[in-house]
Length: 167
Ligand SMILES: Cc1cc2nc3c(=O)[nH]c(=O)nc-3n(C[C@H](O)[C@H](O)[C@H](O)COP(=O)(O)O)c2cc1C
Image (cartoon, rainbow, N blue to C red; front, side, top):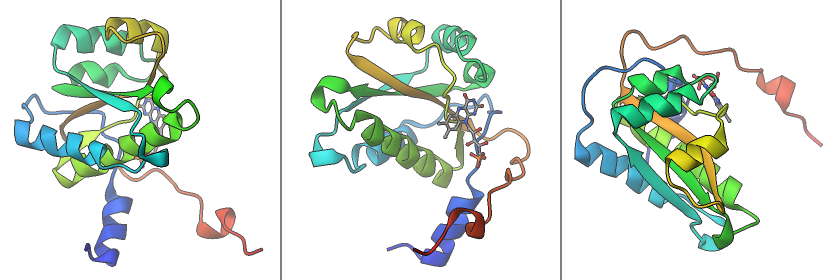
């Protein structure tokens, strides 16, 4: 088990990273990130997902052009596309794959690898680039790389009193 105090600090210190070193990520570390995804909980344990590891520079460049706030995708040595298999669980594929993305981001962070959730994406176009089936849902593309430069300051969080109430 992880020390809870340290775990909370770890969660607070994770940042979205948009600048990456031009340094390959070792296979062992990629595998650990994928394993973290594989061990994510899912509704009825259906695991309605697929992970695509993208290293092709040209493809990363093309994807970045279809992401409104994702220019950094083309600067990453690698990205993982998280795909929801709608047919395998039409009710919970979004929740399940969203949890996967968090597992992967946290695993990456523990390895000193920065990631950034890409939301604003022309999903249909990118789906085609990735050769995905019409029935697949492209949740996000997570660009990944060792952190270049300083870790950004934490963006403001609402206070607990703003977002919590006793009922
Ligand atoms: C659903 C979702 C969509 C996001 N989309 C983008 C995006 O398209 N481009 C980007 O640069 N960051 C994106 N982000 C990252 C957020 O901007 C970031 O998580 C937030 O500002 C808090 O910063 P932090 O992750 O460093 O704590 C997204 C995050 C989430 C959870």
